[in-house]
Length: 467
Image 1 (cartoon, one colour):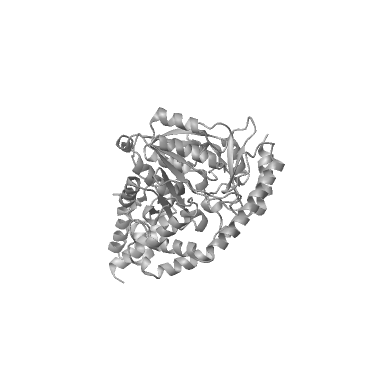
Image 2 (image 1 turned 90 degrees about the vertical axis):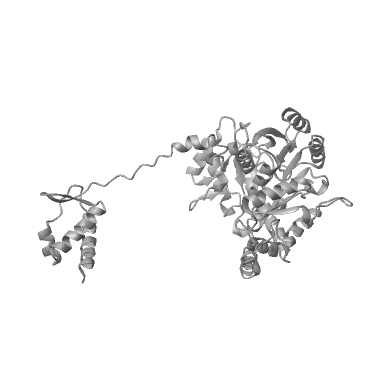
C-alpha cells in the first residue's frame, strides 16, 4: 500500500476517533500511533496533518496534538438587504392557510383543492403519459397557448353567451400557468404600482396577495348579502378613480355567495360607466351544484370584463393550466406580461389538459363530481347546523367548495383556529380573506378534502372548543 493510501486510512480512523472525544483531549503520540497502525512515523505525521488542515485537531509543539473545540458556523449578515430591498409589497404572511400540508391523522377542512376521489385521476395520468410521448414534450408551444385549447375555452364560455351576442373566440383567449399566475399577470398588465384596485370584502386571499405584490392599493367594498351594492361600488370608483374591480360573481371564495342576474347587470353598468375593467374570477366554473354559471364575460363584447378560468381544481393540482379571456388592447398587454414573465405554458400540460376536457368521459365526470360535492356539502352543513350555535352557518352555497361560518360573539377567530389545529382539525381563519380589517370572527370550512366520514368528528371538535 502506498504512503498516501496509508495516510488516508490512518486519517479516516483518527477522524472517527476524534469525533467521539471532548475538546482539548490529547491524541496518542506519534510513536504510539506508529506502533498501533504499523506505519512509519512519516506516514502517521501525514495523516495527522490532514486532520490539522481540516480543523479537527491542533498541534502544540512540545506538548502534542489535541482535539480542537468545534468552531461555530459563521453567522451570516443579511442586514444589508433591508436597505437594498426597501419596503415589502407582500410577504409570507399573506400566503393563505389553504397552502398548509396536513400531517397524518389530521382532519383537513382547510384545503383549497379537491382530493383524488373527486378528480379524473386515471384520465389525467393517461393524458400526461400520452403527451409525454408526443411532440408536445419537445416543441415550443405558441406563446398564447395551443390553438385547440384556446378554442375549447372560448367554446365553453360561449355556451353562456346570449343568442345573437358577440361570444368570445379563440383569439380572445390566452393560456396561463394556473389561475394565480393569471391574476398576477392581469393586475400587472392593467394597472401600475400605486394604482387603486377595488375588491370585494371578504374575498380570495390569493387575489389580495397578488394585488399587493403588484404594488396596487386595495379599496375594499363589502358584499351586501350576495353581491356588492352598486351604489357603494360607484362611490368607490368616484372616490378613488380606480380602473380595476376584482370579483367572484359565482360561488365566491370564501363565502359561497352568487350574484343575482339583476345585481350582475347593475354592477356591470357601474363598471362600464366608469370606463373600468371587471376582473371576473370564474374559479368555481366546474363546481356549480344548484345554480348555473353564467359568466359575465360571455355578455360583454366591449372588453370591460376580463375573465379568469382555471382547470387546476377540477382536473388536477398538477395541471397548472388556466385561461384569461380579454379583448382589445387589454388582451395585448396581458399577453406581453405573460411572455415577459414566463414565455409560454408547458406544451405537455396543455396537451394533457386538452385531452382530458375533450374526452367523452369529461362531462360524465363533472356530473359525478358535482353529485359527490353536493352530498359532502349537505352533510357538513347539516352537522354545522345541528351541532354549532344557531346562525353559525351564514348560508348554504349553491356551488363551490366551501362553507363560511360566523363564530359566536366573544370568540376570536385566530385563537379558535389554533385550538382546532391543536385538536387535529385544520380550518381556515377568516382574517386572511379580508383585504382590510375583518368585520367579525369567521372561519372557512372546505368540504372537498379527504375522508368525509370524519365530518362529524370534526364538527364535534369545533363545538367542544366553542365557549
